[in-house]
Figure 1 (cartoon, one colour):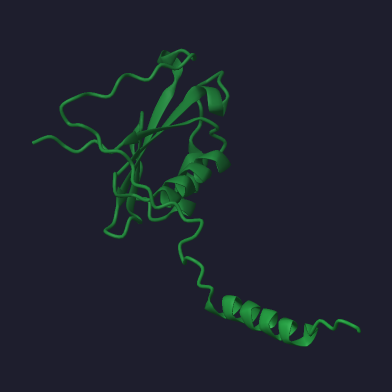
Figure 2 (tube, helix red, strand yellow; figure 1 turned 180 degrees about the vertical axis):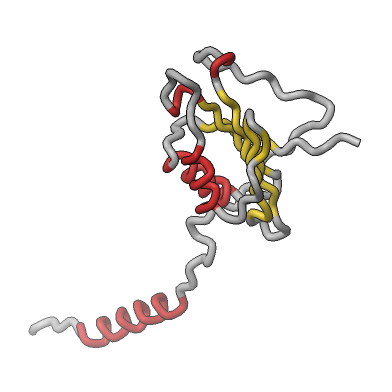
Length: 154
């Protein structure tokens, strides 16, 4: 007496289950996105001074300010340096152009003679912040400081 295993019905059932799981799978639309907000700056305390091993007297400080829109995107970008504020920056490509125009102090390399600090609003998503950090890196600045946006005290 031969024992026969009915393989066709088992294959039909396994393909039906496979088709069901493939057709009903719904991946998350924001998978891979960073939607974490930046920490808030307590107005009662001043941030600690940043210590850099390079002599601070010869280093030019530039601050990039990012204000966020209601959806967490970048509403406007501004940059201040030792010579004053640069004109309104409309997008990250224009920011890259402004960063590449900066010349380091005499006798210093770009990464040694210039300090870049990004002040970002606490509602700005990290994806937009990382985009601005990438623009700084493309312009040749390996070290970028981050800090929360300081609100004007009234």
